[in-house]
Length: 165
Image (cartoon, rainbow, N blue to C red):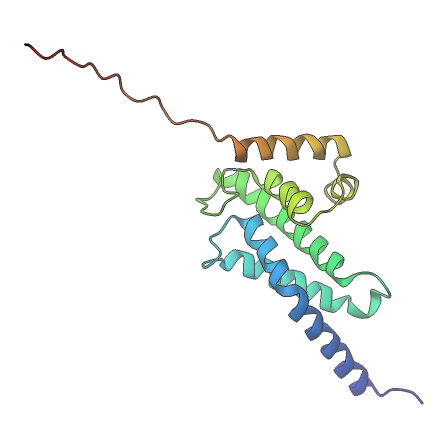
């Protein structure tokens, strides 16, 4: 017996809703880290996630055994890379507040995919069009920048006068 179109679409919607209920929070956290926004105020991250989920839903029937989380994560990363790097270079970088704010967009993308999402260097390289050793170098430099932030200016020299006895 063949399913009617309405039944297939309802099943598809239920499957996608279950996917979003399970994966949406983690994907939003990744998007928030990418955009370097504060977790409680992240409109760019929400917009990025909405577009990635819309793309995943549009491809839902064609995934055929492919991991939908992986597809959504790749869509999120590609959309971030295409949209953010152009704006970053054009405007000199926005004012950011998140924990990865000191990093460039490329560094944030590599750190989020490698360390937060656990994606292999080869896969990150293939996604970004970079050799695996370049991904490793970017990740190491970004990690070093986060663990050892540059010091501020040295304090002004203070002279202490000896007390007269």
